[in-house]
Length: 405
Image 1: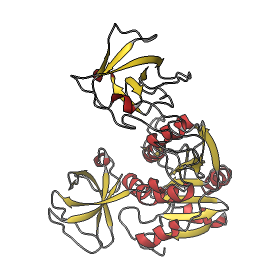
Image 2: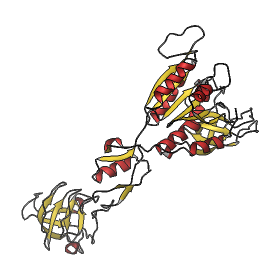
Image 3: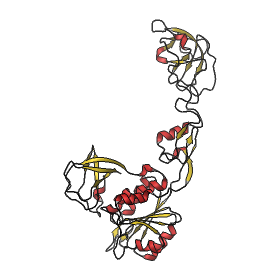
Image 4: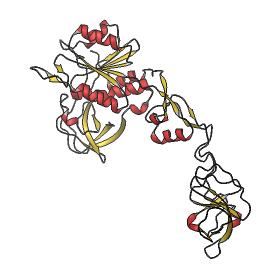
């Protein structure tokens, strides 16, 4: 087994071409997806000059000098609620009552809030009602222009950008009911080992209930991917058949277990006999060093350790970058930060070691229970902390690179 450094393995993953698959989804379903092309607004937003408040619209010159003691007196020529399509001619000395979002008549250039105006007689909205304006309002004051947010023909979202809720709202406002996005491909998840029982199977002597499939499928769903989960014993024929049956439907197969050098670590042999191209096998890190990446036709196969925490850590460190490359969504990679150990960690390592931890206010709190087979201490953790190779023990206050889950 020729071990690569973490950086070398990630460079191999970085060379993976993205899957050229696109689809159109409802604007209601586009949040969290990646734009497949530049998305151009089909309309101005807002599509007309509108009022930002409830009040009266008029010519600003007609209220010049108005004050609480000397109000301007205007005649109400109409009423413009939000959604009104009617147009009004507003002459000198006239105004219209207007609601928030109402279309400002072409003859008007300013709006005053209802709190700075009243009626001389009652609150009628029609007829020749006289309105008193108690505040001078300048040209284009309280005035929202058509296209103020964005204009027709403007690129709202560039190809390759991830769409968030705010952008989805803009796309809807731009008159785009369906959005072109990168297709989300399904992942096939295969948990291997003759000692493994499915979660719903009775536990017999020598067996253990599987946890890897639950963690990995849960994380895939959290990241926005669907997956199919299956289990296989340490049987060459069964493993070959399962992989061959899945490679056409699934661009990515994730396996756990059977990837090291033991008598029943069959994945390297199985993939070699299937004619897969082994991109790497073995990475210098702890935990999960037997990691293997292969390609069989158009299908990538990433084989993780069977130890639960080792599978979890290497999924975060390597499967996520691979998912990011295949789906052209760099946001799937873990964000990086720097933190300080809140308590000492007394062990060192000859290779980079990745600790589960909780990251709060710049401090890393590392739980007890660090073995690669332990998973309970992973619960509640929100990051991986990298211990540099060949160093340690590590005192409280030591600065470490942090990968946010």
